[in-house]
Structure formats: structure tokens, C-alpha cells
Length: 151
Image 1 (cartoon, one colour):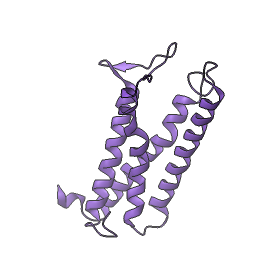
Image 2 (cartoon, rainbow, N blue to C red):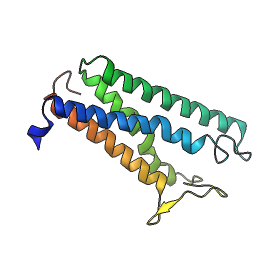
Image 3 (cartoon, rainbow, N blue to C red):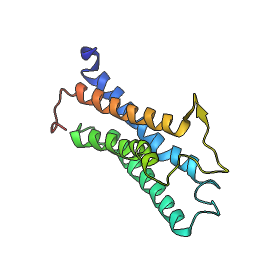
Image 4 (cartoon, rainbow, N blue to C red):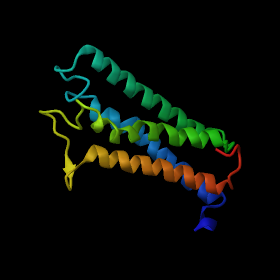
């Protein structure tokens, strides 16, 4: 397996997984939140909507910058793959922290989150995207032989 991850093939696979994680991070929150359940929810205070819009814009901008950085320079800098993994992980991993904070919930009536085997699909997506970003970082790192700054 480690030989399969070395060299150009591993680099392309790693970058591709990081790209997928960043595309999901840019698009999925917009698709899930730019609607009546979040941004246009009349029950939300104006300031909560403000924060939702800024969070969506930030993740879309950072994820887009990551994708550009991964594919434009070809320099293979360790910081490129680090940030390409860090942004999706920083967005999605807190989905597991938020429900333990008193007063928070995964969904809000009348907008229930769909569930698979009792688990909210938002948490399943968060887990999958976090794992995709981590796998992309690991594979890309292995393909470069831990070069380029060691991150």
C-alpha cells in the first residue's frame, strides 16, 4: 500500500480527495442553509442570520482558495495540503462538539434533519468530509515522502 501512495499517483489522489472535501465544504453548507430553515428563517434574529451568512461566505472563500492553491502552483508546499485539510476539518469537526453545548440542537422544528439508522445526515456528512480531508492530507503527505516543510 505504501508504494501505491508514493509518487505522482499518490499526489494526484491526495489532491483529489482534498479537492472533494473542499468542494463539499464550499457547496454543502450553502445548499443546506441558504433557505427558510436557516438564513431566511423568520424565527431567527437578524444578528444570527448575519453570522450564518458570514460563515457561509467564509467557508466558500477559504475552500475555493484551497482548491486554487492545490492545483495552480504545483509547488507541493506542505502548507498547501495542510490548509486544504484544515479548512474542511475546522468546519465539519465541530458538528460533533455543538450538540453537547447546552441549548443547541442538530435540528429545529419544523425543519427536522433526516436520519439514517437514527443518526442525523448532517453528522454523517460531517464525518465523511472530515475523513476525506484527513485521508487526502495523509495520502498527499505520503506521496511526497514527508518533504516540503514537514507539515
